[in-house]
Image 1 (cartoon, rainbow, N blue to C red):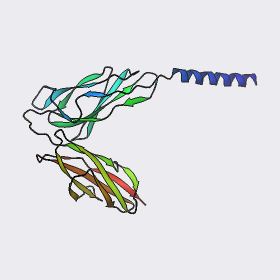
Image 2: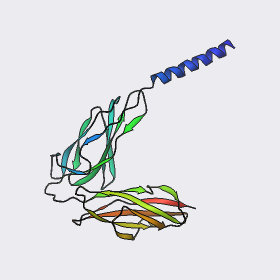
Image 3: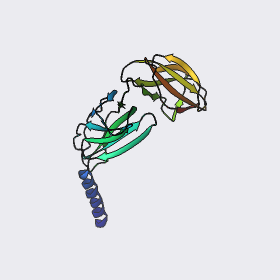
Image 4: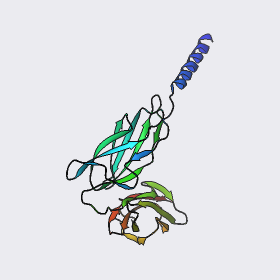
Length: 227
């Protein structure tokens, strides 16, 4: 009995020590540069197609390192690199839309704090206007399993551009991975009461058009409708 009590006390002591060793989570923080939804003109041109762009954010309390994640919005290719400071310089393609966010990490804890996601355009030499940012699909999300209400669902997305001159969206939607045009010249960022069938996978994407005739493509997304 004494051995059993001793064992329980030892386990309790180890658990208490483990809890004491758990460090505080990283605090919240904000991004500062490149500026959200703007053209980044501060990059240093290093070739006809590339520039070095500086990324800067505020310090998060308790953090000792950060993961900087940058996504090329045309190819949806993401790259992440870890730094111990609150800035980094990365070589990017010119005249290309990107999104970026930072994840703060702290010692002695697996908890992390993620910043907001910002979009920007890497400036291109001689470019007068920039295409809208590719629309971000918000619902249904990629690969989501949804239950329709009365055989209908709502499609939603968000759009933005550096010139705030989006004039409309073209919605492509259907049960094949190359969906046809479903709605044209949509001025809202949603289409409600879209008819769907159960046990079917649907594909969709959004073409954004601005006042200068520039366009961007969200890329194909899909979701599955259950009974």
